Length: 352
Image (cartoon, rainbow, N blue to C red; front, side, top):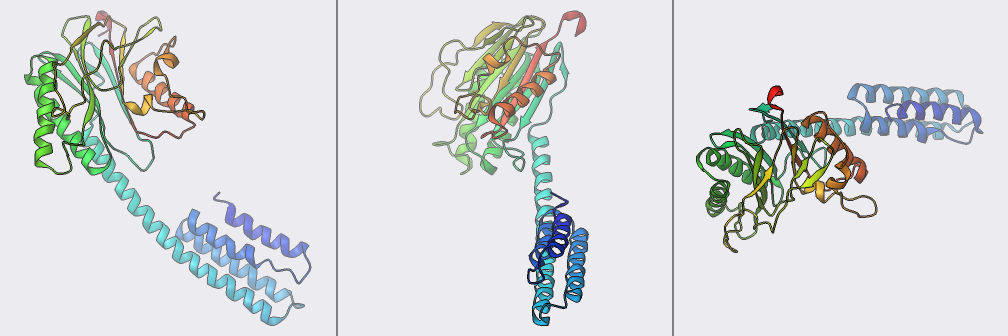
């Protein structure tokens, strides 16, 4: 693509050489700076415009069989287009600078709201990823957090309804509440209730955290210290997976999930805390619906349990890299929603 302006100018010279005198190659020389304006820097656009003008003047000088009025018209046309191309290039470059600034701000917000968790906490190896559906959208409503507490390592992975600033604010509220409540609440059910109250409180205070429409699906997990088990509470979120060292994959789901966080006014019932075996070498994989709602060209949903079954991964990072790549291949690179991914592996005692 970057060579297109040069190809157009060379093509114009070849066209002029191979065609009769009454054929004009001016469209080639006019198109070259316009293409350069969109693809190249200001300096290279200026060089392209200068070469196009020189080529047009040179051909006008040697094509004596053509009426002088036609030759002047061609030169004026190319010069006018070159001036316009320089103006377009200035606008494009200014837009690129603004976009780069917006991306930098969004990336800084993501690092602040969703900091990368430590690679190791106690005997657990941890990896996290935030994969945006579009390159220009660095953060949305997907969230994750890991906290080492007196009650064990506690985790949240969730998805706030909606996008934009309101979703980011809800993410910040939830993670802030999780950090505090994870240290204080003795049970996962108590932790879920604290998060519910935090959303209701902020929803009443802020118009953009609307209680009647806003909600967050989430999974809360806890790995007690010194135990080969894990506990989970699912609030309307896609069930996590357990990847065993043998390659077997188990969906961590037992019974109906409770309502998402933020829907306490619709109805309440006690959270059901599930407990599962979590032996050494096993990996807990949590993700948002950007994974489960990914579709192929035929409209079939991505099945993480089936596609990961029988595979082994040397680390949680390798697992998340493989999952993100597989989803991208499955959808042809056209994912519709962001993905938050979190993998936690229990290490062997002598390797912890």
